[in-house]
Amino acid sequence: MGTETIETDRLILRRFTLEDANDMLNNWINDDEVQTNYGEPTYENLESVNRLLSQWISAYSDASFFRWAVVLKEMNENIGQIAFCAIDVNHHFADVEYCISKAHQRKGYATEALSAVIGFTFEKTGLNRLQAFHRERNRASGKVLQKSMMKFEGVLRKYFYHNENEYDDRIYYGILREDYLNRVTNHSCHSKVADFGQ
Image (cartoon, rainbow, N blue to C red):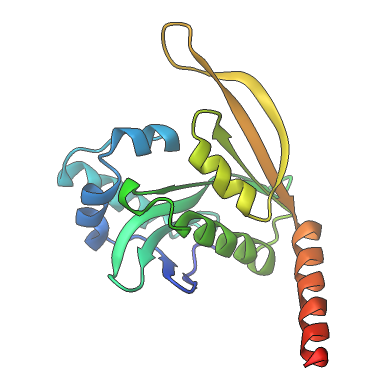
């Protein structure tokens, strides 16, 4: 299937282009805290961002590459990304990750983007499972997962090593195709009952 454009109430999730470089640099990719929580390196200049973008753009020719720019509709501004950081084609599951610039956090954008990608996953691809984790210290990311359709599944204790003998837990959430379809079916039934009641 590959990366296709997804539209939500406030966002457009689309493929990255070279024109995203300035927004990325200004909003999130040079922010140590955002990138550390995301598990990616920090990029400090346009040249390095453009090299990264060129790699991503080239990878879009692969139907198993999924990486979306998170763009605010109102401003046409790139405020983050959401991607499948790993896909297991043999067992039909993917790991999803996301980041939003600090200036745009706590406004529901990450939850909106994740919910849209969950819908895309089970309506457009053959994947049976989507999973994600957050570091224990990254409570904001944990709240995004709690608000999504994903279910808490467990903790890998002291999975990440920081420094000076500091460790951090890896906290897992997941959703199955059957979970998503049941939720959609139940929501549809409730909507029909509400319509009938009117």
